Amino acid sequence: AQKITQTQPGMFVQEKEAVTLDCTYDTSDPSYGLFWYKQPSSGEMIFLIYQGSYDQQNATEGRYSLNFQKARKSANLVISASQLGDSAMYFCAMRELNTGGFKTIFGAGTRLFVKA
Amino acid sequence: DADVTQTPRNRITKTGKRIMLECSQTKGHDRMYWYRQDPGLGLQLIYYSFDVKDINKGEISDGYSVSRQAQAKFSLSLESAIPNQTALYFCAAGQGGNEQFFGPGTRLTVL
Image (tube, rainbow over all chains, first blue to last red; front, side, top):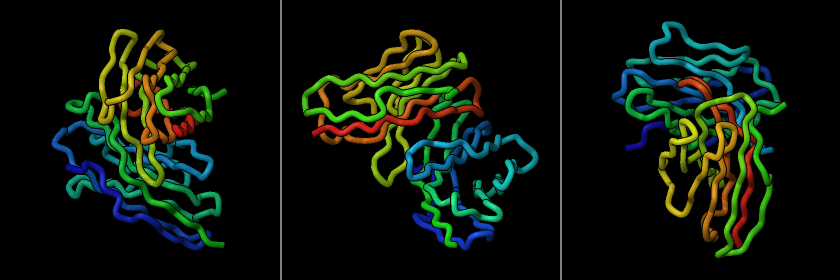
């Protein structure tokens, strides 16, 4: 069964607007972590934000915030005030801390295009 | 300075050749990982290691082997490379459950 689902292969957003990238996950482990990574065309993987399953508040890092809805098993990434440099591939990932042995499972990714 | 470095950054080789990809990290992280990424897809875990004496298979370990020679070094080997191993390979390192720092990637082409 697919554990991380990103249903949007591609997204377009106007510069300076906010955009939400969807991610749903599936796990029976009560202890897990959720990650978002950015991969620009140069290929490197850049860590953006982390949310632990027991964290009470949604994670935020600058223009990035993670809309964590535990009951729905969703961990959407919100990018505020999009910039042209935000155009990249974005990956959602999950690590099951009890049963998964700290392996990180990645979704298929969403390609974001920011329009000027 | 980058926490995680990979060498080489690009490699073209022929079918049947033995290839080794090297990974080093400078922060003393216990955990190290090797992933591959195929064009247009997410990352798949090949092998991971929690310390020098610990090696674990990931989702797609067939055709690959690894060696954790020291805490700071984790190498990936393709004993007999085949064309469908053409991919972007990432090494990563981390200490706890919320950490995973990636290297810059190695682009491998098997002809």
